[in-house]
Image 1 (spheres, rainbow, N blue to C red):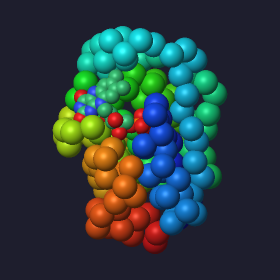
Image 2: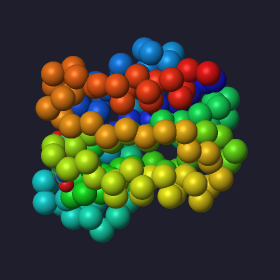
Image 3: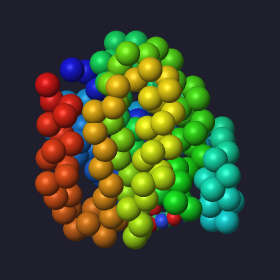
Image 4: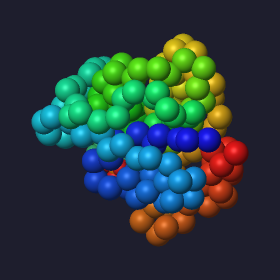
Length: 156
Ligand SMILES: Cc1cc2nc3c(=O)[nH]c(=O)nc-3n(C[C@H](O)[C@H](O)[C@H](O)COP(=O)(O)O)c2cc1C
């Protein structure tokens, strides 16, 4: 199964996990970057209001991939606006499989993962699995059994 990991990470935690996953499942990784940085308050506001912000070119066409993993930090209980934009730019996703993971400071926000899940479900993709990790565990390299379980879903 050829997997694309699409990762938005502001301070590196999510990217660290994405890189570990890439190694385990031999996936391709595309780094989602915004065109402009925004002040903390605006990051929070844009996420909370489920807005979109311009992103730099990255892999958005799933032609040639069997599955997709979308990953990002939790901002204001939701996904960063860059993820909303990324999802809207995806092509050739129908019928493919997907997984989701988020990292967060404290909350194991259900909302952020379900935002991505609901969107991709609606596009005709099939959900394989999700995980939520705390940034302090990521700092300690402690991804737990959840990571191993997630990896297995994408190895077949
Ligand atoms: C703008 C902003 C909003 C955040 N909002 C939340 C939040 O609502 N809940 C939470 O648990 N952590 C929140 N955090 C913490 C991040 O989710 C956490 O540090 C995450 O692991 C960072 O991932 P990254 O290093 O890949 O950017 C927020 C951080 C930022 C910068």
